[in-house]
Image 1 (cartoon, rainbow, N blue to C red):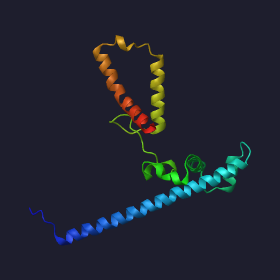
Image 2: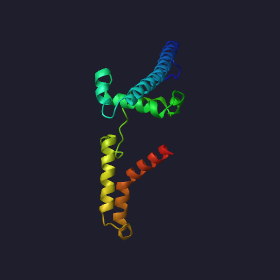
Image 3: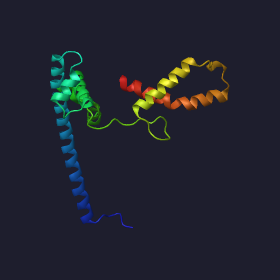
Image 4: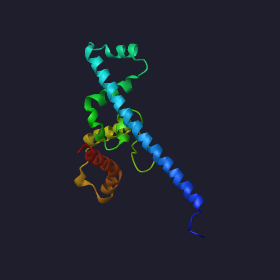
Length: 171
């Protein structure tokens, strides 16, 4: 079998690659523009909300901006409050920024390496249940035999790994 590619195949690969790279550049530019537009939208929404009395905001939003849902308004407003336009590049990557403004959905977090993924809310409910069970338990780790200790370690290892990832992201 020959490892040499036919010139015609090489040209097709080159053309496909150049198209993909060009579209990727366009997508990045559009994502950047989307972030800046979302920031401006959030700033304007924040300005209007500050003018209103407590409890009037959702009514105002529904009456005046029926084209934007409450969740998107909240995300855009949060983006504008927590980020300067010049800071939009602080996100590790554009995907994180687009998740922050709701352009793309948040990734699902797997509870373990096996089984179906769980949403963040489900994950947090499991963590809360685990925390509650731990506080209410009468288990003394010093009195566990080796088999019990290994069983707990095996079950809690994915939780500890996820917790460590959270700590690294927060730092």
